[in-house]
Image 1 (cartoon, rainbow, N blue to C red):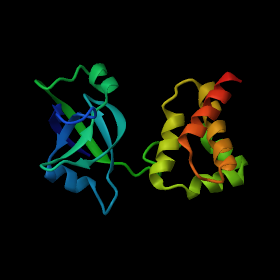
Image 2: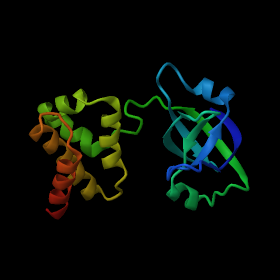
Image 3: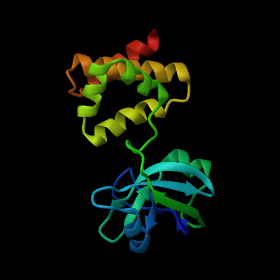
Amino acid sequence: MIEFQGKLAAFEFNHWQYHIPISDEVSSQMMEENHRRVLVWIKDEGPFHMALMKAKEYWYVLVNQEIRGRFHLNQETTFPVKIERDHSEYGHEMPEELQVLMDQDEEGADYFKSLTPGKQRMMVYTVTKVKNPESRIKKALAIIHHLKLAKGKLDYKQLNELIKYYNKL
């Protein structure tokens, strides 16, 4: 794990502007081949699953509005940051609700495993970001149901409709 003083910065060209620049020295120690997933602690809280990304001049991790507000981050002050490689399979911890469904449904699990790593990560995050256990189960059910209906081809509009349907149950 590497510790350093971070400072919030902002790009001027898009809505994903807030980020923490990561030095080449630190970023080079975090990457191997195409694996750029990292765990980040801000002010000793975390870990937050993030990805190292490259701007023209430097590497960085994006910081969303929730994290900025929670830690009162601004562009004027520095704050402690810890970073280490994320060795998890999906870039997030596999939620128990989704794992149980895949353990019970071989077809659904096969379709999930056939997705690209980025799409798998997105599906895991879709379940993980919800705090309520009942809602997590409903999202996991909707994802597996959708993958089986669509024969493993993700259609986000259709998936969102299924999630809405399951949320009403």
